[in-house]
Image (cartoon, rainbow, N blue to C red; front, side):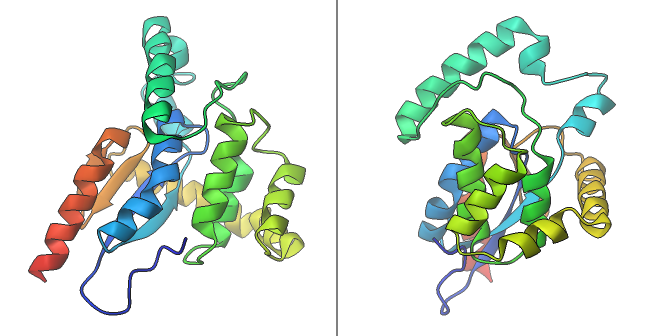
Length: 211
């Protein structure tokens, strides 16, 4: 589904800041385009590395790994929410998974209509198929299925320019006080967590109506 709104009428943007290794980002990535279309809101995809954010807090990995009780709760919560949203779910055997390559691919495809489908397929690869999302072969297969120039996109994703863009993007997330994923922004207003997606979209709709 395209992230573009209808050509007529007022519209607003919602930024989604996400990491492919983030389980709660999975829920929002799988839902945001359909929900945004109903609110006549455009989706602005903002990939970033969550690891450096955690490191700035003194955490070596996800709090769901560091804190057993929180992790046990999160996996039960994921199973419930995936059932609620009718999203497939399989607890990954590796968590969190490194997903630098697909994040760079999203940057290469900034503003292009296929990015939403790409993001969903990478998330399904991680949280449904339980496979390596940093594998060039896996990412190449997704790009080919989406009809993209696979070799060209991968070459750009692996370039020094795109590597630097992801570093800058992750630093920008830190500068904007992002502390977890997914995080949404609507005209500078922050909403954190999958359970705030609907609130962020309603806020975007209200902003558009006032314009």
